Length: 223
Ligand code: DC
Image (cartoon, rainbow, N blue to C red; front, side, top):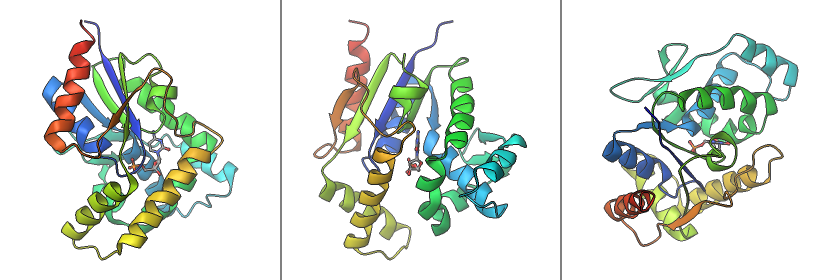
């Protein structure tokens, strides 16, 4: 059976993850959150006390072939079989260091192999920063999700408040802007719209409207 792949890229806090998850569910495709894998390796680097400025030490760590999988029901990230979802979502050290770890060449090469191995078996919706450009350059549908900065700040601010975290709007804005800057300016696989990606501006679209728009673009494929 042939598979169909959908790549979703974009800036932090644009709603990519929710959209990718909703789209995968609607189409019965596998959802792959590639950012979770970068967060998982950041957790591993921190917990093994590997110096992230030491390329050799990072290479050695990856030689142990850490496994990164998603649990069936919950979609939680399993690192070497251990559920690390709480750490990758809530540990500030992971959030503060993930862009640095994601800029390391051997880390990107390792995850590229893991991510590409997932697209051969089943149709996937994969979201991240380099999915349409590097991981799935032949994806049937590529979306590049954007939203105005103030809208992104509001969404992330409310999300953090809901989970009981106290951050000011200014802190949230600063965090989003600095991550975007690091993601866009790194040497390897920087965040960039693929030439054949369709821009989906979600500023004035709610969750349901985003899904409807994406499903519309998907059904246009068969026209
Ligand atoms: O999507 P996210 O916020 O969970 O991603 C966490 C970090 O990982 C983010 O700073 C960018 C990086 N990342 C990346 O470099 N390439 C990807 N395909 C996905 C995420």
